[in-house]
Image (cartoon, rainbow, N blue to C red; front, side):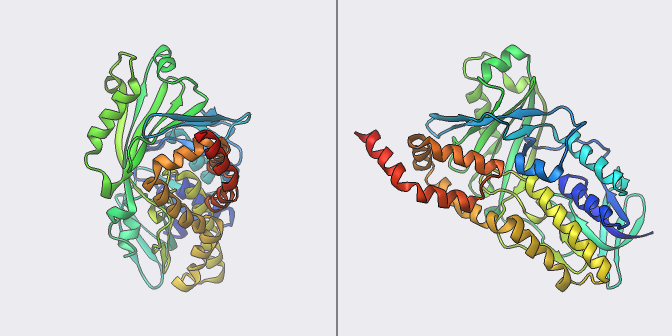
Length: 395
C-alpha cells in the first residue's frame, strides 16, 4: 500500500510530524512497535514553550503545575525561585504520548501499533518499509524512532553516537505514601536538580504520590552510573529512614544524544526528528520541546515535497534550515553554555547565589521566554551589577 508519508515511532516528534502531515492533506501511516499507551523513560516535564506547540491539554491526566525549581550545588548549597504562575507541567509519558497520538489520529493519521519496523529500503522511486506484520511504501519516511533509530541506520545517516556527543541516564518511578513524600521534598510545586557531579546531575520530579528520580551525564565521563544512582537515592533520602530502592515501581536506562552538534538529519526521502536527530538540550537533557518542534518542521517540509513531487536530498535540505531558524542554532549555543558551566560549576552557582536575578532569568530560559543566547547576553550585560554584588558580599 502506498502512503505519502510513513512515520516510525509514536513519541512527541512522531505524533506531531504525523499530525502536521495529515493536516496538510497527506496520507500518513504511523508505525509503533509497542502497544499504546506505552511506558517511556522521561521526567515528563513539559515546558511552556512546548505547551504552546501542543495547544490545549484538555483531557490529559494526570498533570501537575510546577512554579519553579530548586537547584543544589556540588557542595549541597541550594538556590530556589518560585514564580506566581506555572512555568511547566509534569506528567507521565504514556498518557502524554497517547494524547498526542490521538490528536494525530483525529487529523486522519492511520495508526499501527504492535508493529515493529525491521527494514527500510530507500529506493529511487519510493521508500519500502518492512515490518513484523507487512510491507508498505511511501514517498517520504520520517524517523521518529528515538536515539537508537533504525531509520537513521538504514538510511546510512548514522551508525552510532559518539561517547563525547551523548549522555546516559537511569530513571525510576518511586511510589510512596504522602507522609514520606512530604519528608523528602519541601514543596511539591517545585522540581529539584542536584548538580553533585561534574559530569551531569540528578533530579526529582514530584507527581502526586510518585517521584520521578534519575541521574545522568555525558557517557565519556561516567564511570559507574548504577552506583551513582544508588548513591543519589541514599543522598536524597536523608534521614527519612526508608529504603527508596524498595519502592521503585519502574526503572530503566536511556541513551540521550546531546544537541548542538552538526549531524546528518536528512537524505533522499528521509527526515529524522526528535532524539533520532539528536535534538536535545545539552545542559539539562530536555527533549520534548525539540521533539515537537522538529516534528512540525519535518511535517511541513514533507508536505511541501509531496506537493512539488520532489523528495530529493536537495529539496529536503529545507528541513535543516527550518530547524536552525526555530531552535537548532540556539542548541549550538546551548552546547557552548553547557561545556563552560560544567567546567566551572562552583563558580556558576556562586554567581547565581550572589545575584538571584540570574537564576530567575535562567528558569525563564527553560520556560521559553529566553533563548540560551539571549540569556548569556543578558548575563553579560548585567555583569557590572553582579560584580558589585560580589564585592559587597566579600565585604
